[in-house]
Length: 150
Image: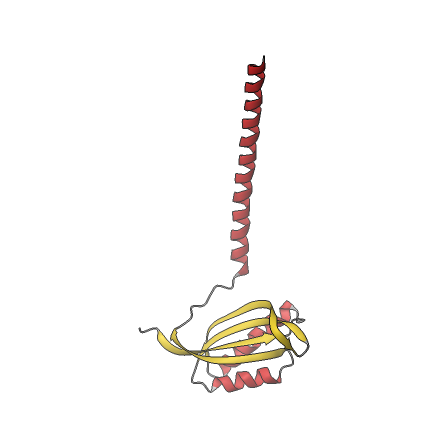
C-alpha cells in the first residue's frame, strides 16, 4: 500500500502529418517543460498514429502520446497552456489518478530490434531443418516404394 499515490496522466494528440523527428521533439519539449514547472515524469509513451473517433480540425487520424507525471497540480497549467498555444497539438486532456504508480517501459528500440532479428534467425533455422527432414523422409519413402514395386 506504500505505492498508492496520486499522479496525473496527460494524453495529447498531435497532427498526423508531423515527421517522426518532430514528434520526438514535441515529446521532449513537453517533458522538459513539465520538469521545469516542478513536475516529475513517471512515464512517457508515444502510442502511435491512430484513427480518431471523429474528425478534429479536418484530421481523421492523430499521433497519441501518453504522459504520466507527479506534482503539486500547479505544473499542469503550464504544460496545458503550451499545448493550447501549439498548432501541432489538436487535443489534450489531463486526468488525476490514484493507485499504484506506473512503471516506466523501456523505450530502447535497438534492443527490441536485436531480439526480433535473433528470434527470426532461430525460426528460419528451424524451418530450414524441418524442410530438410521432409526432403529426407520423401526420398526414403520413394526408395521404399521402388523396392516394393520391383
